[in-house]
Image (cartoon, rainbow, N blue to C red):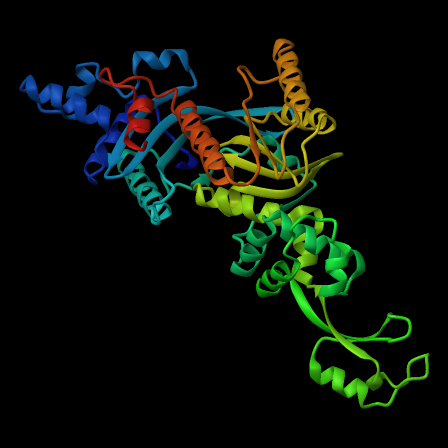
Length: 447
């Protein structure tokens, strides 16, 4: 997956000084694509590629193609192994005080890289330091440049009133969530949660309507992954009601040794002792609002290349509640999770959230199916909004994940496609250089 670092700083540069900055970077082994091409042309003509010669031949980092972007004063590109950097000089408006707008030259460094790179931040810092040193050489800054992170962030990420930053799932939580992905395991656990504690025989009677449900086997798996805990129950022989519970045999023996009597007159030690099971704190946490689904989704999103900072869960903005929000290079991907059928009644709220928060993609993840009328409703609502121009230009794609078997592949496909599209959009101002499109070159290199 493509990712991007971006930072800006205020500078005292014009277009001519920007060319000097690019030349100064070349002395630090950072050779710009356009600068190298220009030097090659001059060398072929037998000329020394000095800044004066470049200026005399009207070779500048400001292309004629930048005329359509008047706020951009200069641009250069750098490849260093598997790293791509862009350097842009442009104008930016600042509102320092109410009613006062200041326009300043701003230098922007962008670093596009593959998310699998472990040293991406180190490489970005190294390049920013090289630019800072080159600025001093070219007279663009009298002191060390102060770089400000400027990574694109969806608007809703700044408007949220409540949200949880995603964390990489722990191994116990992930193991438990993967067990809950099985329908029989959820059915058994939900039945146990109704009563709090139950014996396996009672559980089998309660679920006798479920065809071929291996209750004892499921209970064993739930215990093995920490979703069920063992309880020892003292049951009244006369009334078949639970009198005492203990989580260990030692505690049970201590209770029985006290000589306490049941209401029927028998000693507790004379009553029937059975083994039961009860949900653990982990089970309660993961089944609350189907958080086990969130665990699996976050795991797959991170494996697709996203970081913890890119993912928010259980987000609230005003009256809207959202299961998972994802930032892909400034583009919002909105996910709705349902441990049931996604029905027509769900479609209206989902579509409204896509439109209200300007999502680039919508993803419905359901353990069942998405009702046909729900799909039709989403298509109609998004289509009407597009005609009214209340949505972003172009179609908002919605992906349906029905059942969890295809969850990894579908999430990865959406994230990677959106990352490629966002990177191409981010680099769209970098017009073709020497008949080579920089966005297409970059996407081809990292495909």
